[in-house]
Image (cartoon, rainbow, N blue to C red; front, side, top):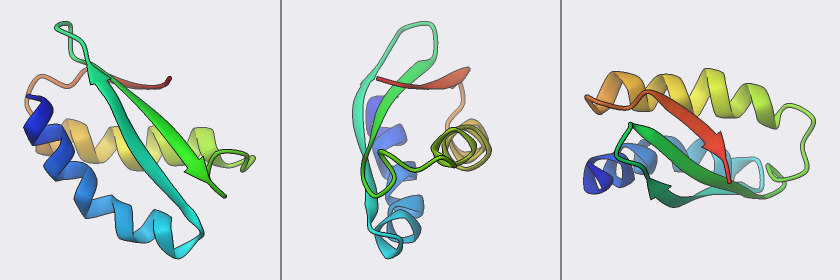
Amino acid sequence: MKEQVQKALEKIRPALQADGGDVVLIGVDEDGTVKVQLTGACGGCPMSTMTLKQGIERLLKNEVPGVKEVVQA
């Protein structure tokens, strides 16, 4: 599943990089929890929670079967 998550993150990465940020995959737990770290401008942005849940989590749930939740590591 980790490879699928990494591939899906590549789809959203250009949008994050356009705003001066990025996302790093930390790990994928067996229960379907994906741990990521927002870096650059995204790391300290007040909208980072919305980016994480409404952007990254929604994309991963649609693209990768078994993803239950995305959390900031």
